Length: 350
Ligand SMILES: [Mn+2]
Image (tube, rainbow, N blue to C red; front, side, top):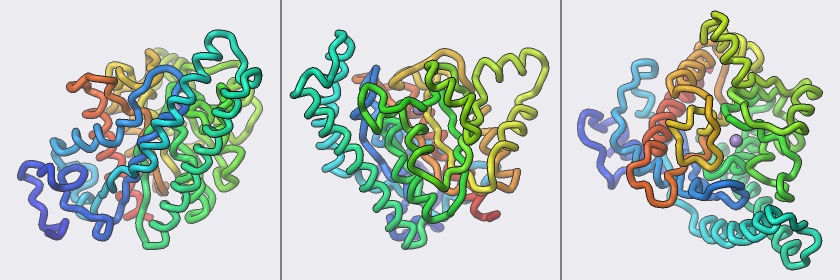
């Protein structure tokens, strides 16, 4: 069946692809790369299952989006999980757990030859993953596709950001997150989930401006980097809340956020930017944050401003070890669908 013949009023068939769409990698315009990876998570496991949990939850979403009607008919497709990535994640995650537990007992990785070797394996494995994603995204761009990514932890999108920079040129990142993710090799892991934006600043020259929203858990080193680096503009959660308490509207704050962004925008959405009631199983939840509607409004305003979204990721969605009915994947699937629509709409204007 062609995607355009799909009856949106019928139930989502589990035999179809994400959102119940009869899409394939050939007929879909937007490919959502699933990356089941959580090697460097520091607090709680589970986000490697994010892509499959989001996909399972996505079948029950109704496709009518009055802000972006029928963009789904261009085709959204999530390929099968890559078995090699799963295997590698499981192995390296085990190594990382040994390193982290040694650190938390006051040990130093460099004093232990075995752990030092594991650390090197992890850092090499992360480079391999980044390169694999870069190649996969670049191949898809060469075929005329758009590419987004579903994590996994927040380390996963680096390869996509690099490929998007090569393909589209100068861009800014709109990061929704509770954390600044500006640590230099957190816990010794060069490509840690807590270091993604540090690495982007270092390794992606096309990325001209990082605009962070909702940040509320950060260390001194990150705060100093934010203060001293003109490529970073951070809207801390406490500042946003204070502006609201004193009478500013969310619209005014969104206009301010968007004015910091260049014409081309990559959106990196760490689900923990939301209020943890919406993502209680995420790896590192922090009180505060946003309602999902606030962020969806922000994305719509980005599109309305005439800016182009060049790519995006959604990461750190987790359902915990055994919670069947966790809200996280449901919220994640709805946000992902909305991001797809806003992405397609901004590219229809571009
Ligand atoms: Mn993050």
